Length: 390
Ligand SMILES: *[C@@H]1O[C@H](CO)[C@@H](O)[C@H](O)[C@H]1NC(C)=O
Ligand SMILES: *[C@@H]1O[C@H](CO)[C@@H](O)[C@H](O)[C@H]1NC(C)=O
Ligand SMILES: *[C@@H]1O[C@H](CO)[C@@H](O)[C@H](O)[C@H]1NC(C)=O
Ligand SMILES: *[C@@H]1O[C@H](CO)[C@@H](O)[C@H](O)[C@H]1NC(C)=O
Ligand SMILES: *[C@@H]1O[C@H](CO)[C@@H](O)[C@H](O)[C@H]1NC(C)=O
Ligand SMILES: *[C@@H]1O[C@H](CO)[C@@H](O)[C@H](O)[C@H]1NC(C)=O
Image 1 (cartoon, rainbow, N blue to C red):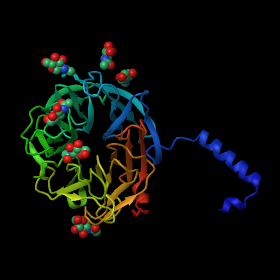
Image 2 (image 1 turned 120 degrees about the horizontal axis):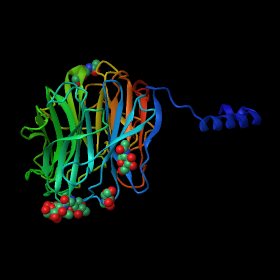
Image 3 (image 1 turned 120 degrees about the vertical axis):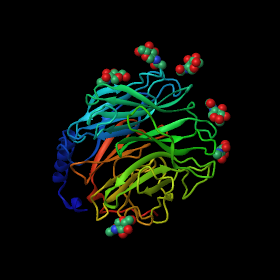
C-alpha cells in the first residue's frame, strides 16, 4: 500500500534493483537459517524420495534419499546417493553412493542414517550406520551397513530382518521402513512388519549389542483390528520429561477420520522399547484437521519449559508443534515455505537447538517437486504465528 504513493521512477528503479539483487542473491551465511535450497536435482525420469540425514559430531550434515524411477520391483542398480554439507546445509557435495553389496537386488528404498556415539560391534564412535530396504521379486531385506571413513565407503554388516516381496496388500509378508536409534549400548532397528498373520501390518523393533546378532521381535504398535496398518515409525526423545515419542501413520482399511485415510498417531513411553503398552493418540489441530501420512518427529529444547515437539506429514507444507509434552489438546499448526513431500524429514541442530531443518524430496504421487531440498528455520520465529484450520 505504501509503495503506491511512491513516484513511478523510484518504483522502476526499486524493481530493477530487486531483480538484480535476486539474480546474484548471496549465499546465506554458514549455519544460518534460510528458505529452500536444492541439494540434488535427479536426472529426468528419476525422483529423489524419502530423504534422511544425520548430523555428525563436528556439525557435518549427511543427506541421502532413495532415487525412484525405472523398474520398481527388480532394479539391481538402484542405490542411494550421499551428500555432505560442512556449513549447515548451504553448500552440498555428492560424496558416495550406497549400493547393495550382498543380495543382487539393489538398494531399493527407505534409508536411515545414524552416527555411533559409543563403540558398538567393533566399530568406533564416529562410525556412520546406514539401513535401507533392499528388495526384489524374491523378498524385502532390511540390511545394515557401516562407514568408518565419513561416508566415503560402505561395508555390509548384517541382515537385520527379511520378509516377502514388496506388496502392500494385507496377507502379503514384506517388511518396510527401518528407523535407527542408539539406546542403552544397543542399536534398535524399528520397522513396519506385514509378516504377523494377526495384523495387516504392525510396527516392531529388534535390538543388537554387536550389530550382527539381532534379538527377538518386540512389538511397538499393533491393533486387534486386522485391517489396521500402522506404518512408518519415527522416534524422538523429549528430554525435559525424560520420555520418548513414536509417530506413525495409521490407515485402517478405507476408513477415514477428519477426511484423511492415513491419520498421524503418536505414543509416549518411558523407554523407546516400551511403546506397545502406551496408548495411541491422533494428532488433531483445533478439533478440525488431521495431518496425513508418512510423519516425522523431532524435539527441540526451544519454545518453552517443555521445549517443542515438531511433526511433519506428507500432505501439507505446514508443520505441527506441541509445547506441552505431547498433551493431546495442545497441537498447533504453523506455515513454512518448504513444500509438502512424501516422508519429509526434520532435524534439530546440536549447536543451534532452535534451528529446525525441514528436508524434502518428491511427493508420493508424481507431479510435485522431484528434487532433494532443505530449509532451515528459527523455530522460535515459526512458533509466533499459528494457522487455525477453517
Ligand atoms: C545396470 O548396470 C549395468 C552396468 O552398468 C548395465 O549394464 C545394466 O543395463 C543396468 N541395468 C539396469 C536395469 O539399469
Ligand atoms: C554415484 O553414482 C552415479 C551413477 O548413478 C555416478 O554418476 C556418480 O558419479 C556416483 N557418485 C559418487 C560420488 O560415487
Ligand atoms: C529370484 O529367484 C529366482 C529363483 O531362484 C531366480 O531365478 C531369480 O533370478 C531371482 N530374482 C532376483 C531379482 O534375484
Ligand atoms: C500381493 O499379496 C496378495 C495377498 O497375499 C496376493 O493375493 C497378491 O497376489 C500379491 N500380489 C503380487 C503382485 O504378488
Ligand atoms: C478399499 O476400497 C477399494 C475400492 O473401493 C477396494 O477395492 C478395497 O478392497 C478396499 N480395501 C479395504 C481394505 O477395505
Ligand atoms: C510439561 O509436560 C508435562 C507432561 O505432559 C506436563 O505435565 C506439564 O504440565 C508440562 N509443563 C508445561 C509448563 O507445559
